[in-house]
Image 1 (tube, one colour):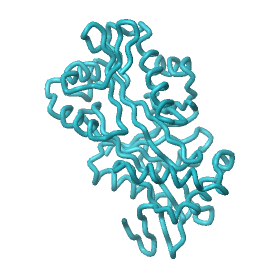
Image 2 (image 1 turned 45 degrees about the vertical axis):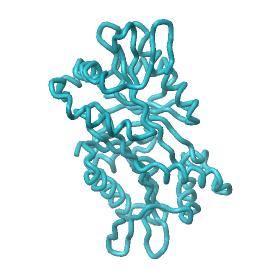
Image 3 (image 1 turned 30 degrees about the horizontal axis):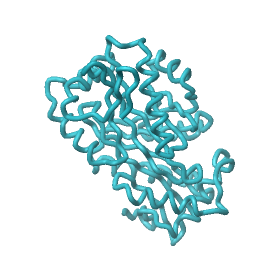
Length: 153
Length: 153
């Protein structure tokens, strides 16, 4: 948990699910693949997240309103001399808060937390259509050194 | 564990570390970042992997020789209606076995295992310099839909 001014970044709970899913769906890509009217699948997923100590699903909250979310996964590994890495997924900022700097605060939280957890690398993928996001991550120090491959099952 | 002809894909153990690290180092990128003469850091990393039930570090073995390795991470999540995804990392094939089809068998093992573990997506990133690997993943059904960002800490 971290407080920044009146902003708090803390672990997500079941009470936060409506707000999180609403943000996941409020997006050109997310609108096609989320079901905010049926939260049961998200509740089951939150239980899987809570059962895994390497998962850190957080929300950014200001004045009791959930205005951002991000999932950080800690991944041990052998390569890079046994380096643990961190993976960022599902970054979303409430539409009212975009451009406010909240995205940077969330990613900086993720980077700081990764460092505290002895991760040697932070990684993420971003859909090739999200060109604004790519500039955003480059400003934060990330390099687009890799191709990101996906296969739906 | 799965046997294919005389090939077996099974969970990696501490006894496999010299062979795995040798493969990690036998690579234009890996040569600069691995330390095969000091296995202690890899032993500690293997303990972290073994402690995490969502980690599947495997080796491909033929006639008692380790000839391939791959790490599969199962990642629960909220997006895509609570979809769990799988991440493939650290794919290596012994130099003597490249072009033998072993890489395809390993990735197909990872895809099948991901399906059995109810994952709805398999993802991986590949350094932009590894253009042969990109064609290989596309032949196996993957699409390079994402930019892969990395930040070293």
